[in-house]
Image 1: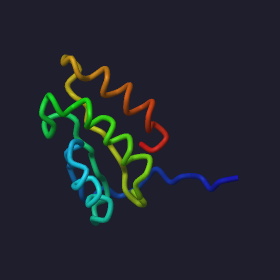
Image 2: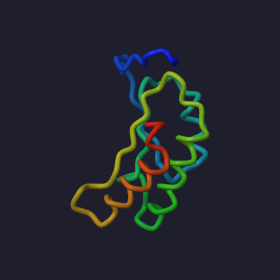
Image 3: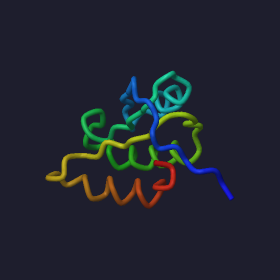
Image 4: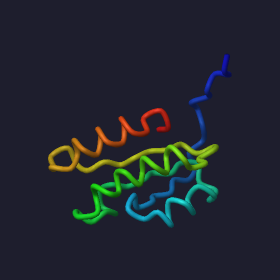
Length: 97
């Protein structure tokens, strides 16, 4: 049996990281932020969004985010990108959000 997860964590600092930049995603894991949001919206150019989704999934599944609340900011609900943002990330790494 695993120990219960304490969902109440301090969020004094939040780091925004472009989902399209693997180097930044790698570095963010070791920075002293309480929360990291992996950005698919403003930080990603339209042509980079499809690959950025898969990059985020890879880093959520393989990275060491110990002690950090992980959040993915998807595109606005009224855009053509939102549906794939949600489906790709949740299906690929939902257990690591």
